[in-house]
Image 1: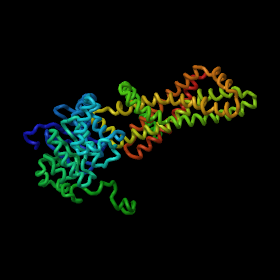
Image 2: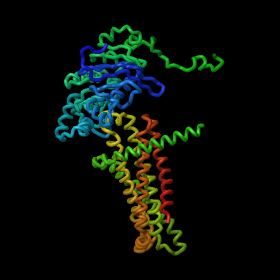
Image 3: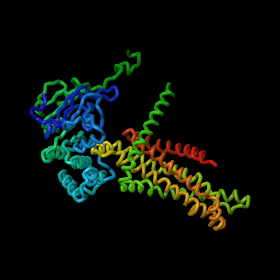
Image 4: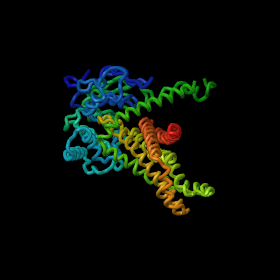
Amino acid sequence: MTPNGQEIIVRVRDLRFAFGPRVIYDGVDIDIPRGKVTAIMGPSGTGKTTLLRLIGGQWRPQSGNIEFDGIDVHKQSRDGLFELRKRMGMLFQNGALLTDLTVFENVAFPLREHSGLPERMIRDIVLMKLEAVGLRGAAGLYPEQISGGMSRRVALARAVALEPALVMYDEPFTGQDPISMGVLMRLVRTLNEALGLTSILVSHDVQEVLSISDYAYVIAGGKVLERGTPEQIRTSQSAMVRQFLDGKPDGPVPFNYKASRDYATDLMGDAGA
Amino acid sequence: MKLLQILVEFLRGLGEATLFLFTMVAALPAALLRPRLVAQQLYMIGVLSLIIIAISGSFIGMVLALEGYRTLATFGSTSVLGVLVAVSVMRELGPVMTGLLYAGRAGSSLAAEVGLMKATDQLSGMEMMAVDPIKRVIAPRFLAGIIALPLLTAIFSLMAIGVLGGYLIGVELLGVDDGSYWSQIHQSLHPRDVAETLLKSLVFGVAVNWIALYQGYHAAPTSEGVSRATTSTVVVSSLAILALDFVLTAFMFR
């Protein structure tokens, strides 16, 4: 089931991707509807961040294709890809702010590199973006002088500086205290409405993410386990989805990483076998 | 079998580094269009290395003058002390010592800076903002490094021969005649010596900055990876400088 009657901005078809022998995606279809907040959820290590890097064209899938606004991301020249990326914003897990630049200069960075606007106009845009994330007062500070949650808000201001069509959030809530988490959640939602963005939210903070998204995917083991509205996800009957949502240690997803020898042999040597 | 694997790994690294050099060189025009970025890096790796270069140059010159004076005095020819200091510094010690000091001071910091930028997703972040990190981060540093090393070598040599080094010890302390110190240098140091110094330092500049930026850019994105990149930068560039110095000297031998 795809989001009905919606215009699709990112279309992923039959995606296959592996790091050496480790298969991350094994035939995945994902549709990201335009103008909505779509959540991609799944246990750690299922390649949620990988998906964002694939959409951004930083990595190349072994097969399958990814279209952004009707353009195949992986069939572009380097220049073509850079043109596409100007319409995508990405928020890295740790913010990825440039540490030798101030907060102001960080937000101004993509504008100065790409927009060719006069410095006065850039200044106004930067101050507006910073005001939107509530950090106009921190414009003169360096990244090491602000907290982790503030860094992410600065990174968010930077990600929307060029007014992109799509913003990708990589684990935006991980390691945040309840207050910054609430602030960030509201920001994701309000920016999506105010700027007419499309947002992709990668996370494993299930309840928080479901509460602000319009549509969600649960992925694990290289497959899409469940897709639908937050309500449909919450009431899913799939055993794996239930284990993930309810945080149970026992279920289809094993607690133990697969070992090559059994426990007794490992402890006692061959005598234990 | 193991040896073969090591050889293959080595060749693969060499190929990767060569490709990296080509990409950097291809991005140099872009760096030329951003003189501010280059100037910033010239300050970071050039100006901030000045003190260590100047002090080391002075000490090397002082030691050369002391040792040289003792030997020359036994032949009663202390008037050529200036030549001894100048020729040793210009032909050999200037470019090599400056190169080694530069590798330790600036090379290591370049590798660590770029390595950490990679580890903290700053390079990835730039790519996602449609900014090429090779053009924005690597090329300006490469260009600045290549400009900085010959200049630092000149300053090193100047300090060693004329200012605090040989001149201070030879003329001011040991009483070698001021006029003969300089005129002997003037007579026996040829423009060709200066050109060779320049060529050597230029080659060392390319080598050290290439190694440092390659190590940083290809560092594993962990604290261990960055530390390994810094160490290999210093080790590999020091060896490269000494080996290249031999090759260049052999070619220019007359």
